[in-house]
Length: 84
Image 1 (tube, helix red, strand yellow):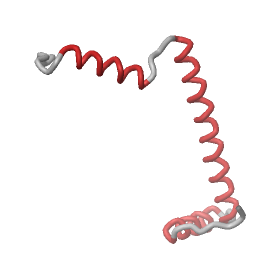
Image 2: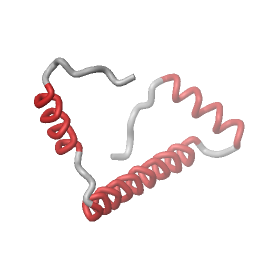
Image 3: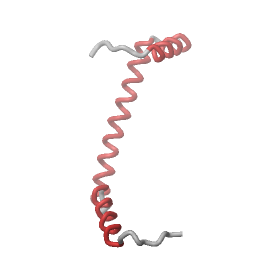
């Protein structure tokens, strides 16, 4: 993908920042996209590592927690007293 369209508001902001910094708009866009992709890749790796660690430590997953809560609520009925 070589070309894309930006909304007018972003185009104006990009032009203003390019003028203020003396950088080319294309360079600013390239750096911004690269930085965001780097972040998303790092985040994906970090979440995968955290999930693996949680599994090794025996943490419950979301589905397991929801199931346990549903079983607990179902077992106690509606007459449960409120915690104060």
